[in-house]
Image 1 (tube, rainbow, N blue to C red):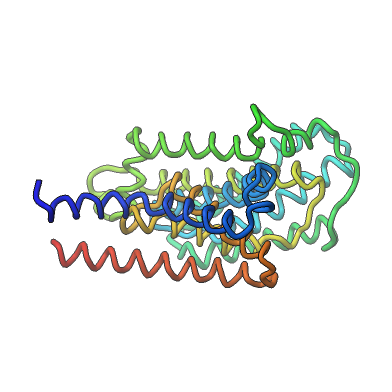
Image 2: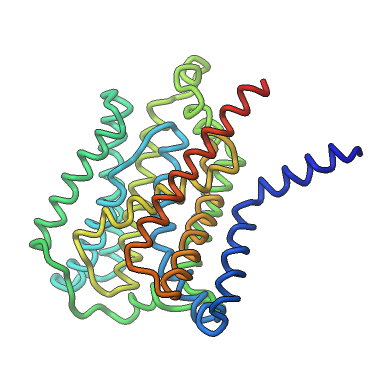
Length: 324
């Protein structure tokens, strides 16, 4: 192998694993700067647990994006789901598992509505899901009166969000399970290959017999279910609900999805890249905050990461066209 080929192989390896290398570099940097507070099991568990809700929400955005569609309602679905879950348990005395199942069903219905409006009615996904998201936000405020919900929640339900499994925070376990299932479905099933085909060229996919409308609806339904599941998990972690949190999660979720896809190539949104990107952003923000950065640094960090991811994706697309 020539030196040129060796350099190309090393470069390809570094690029394909750049997110992991970035995560390692961030952790190493802040561990050096903050050896007592940052480089500790407590901080690692805090970061992994507190960002699990964001990771689930980011995974909810992945499938519609693979199909070439935006689902802007996921953040609002999370807020409604959190409010409904807390309200059903605190004010109506419903069994927490039954409340969680009902909330996930609501997420499925929201995804089904979005899917039909986009796939069957042919409406623009970005505008349509933003509109349905605002309606969902309205329902959350109607149900809660626009205020946060607090009250007694069974300890067993709280343990689902605050407990550990073999020393690993339960929220991180849920994220790993969901990401593994999504990765396997997209990589090894015919359904997953059809999802990517639809995102690549929906008209061509329809011409070769792929049921584009049906699979598009399925992607929105799964996205809605995962957003609702993120709301349930948030309730079990916090023991409370806030109907106005939707927008706070929306930008970080999409920043992670696009950053996670940047190294995989144009349009190659994927589960594991998304999860790693969530924790790259979380690790960086946590380190900056521990160094005393202002509260608004999170917005700069997430917005900058989103711009970087979009720019990288554009650059890769241009290189691919030039190379072909």
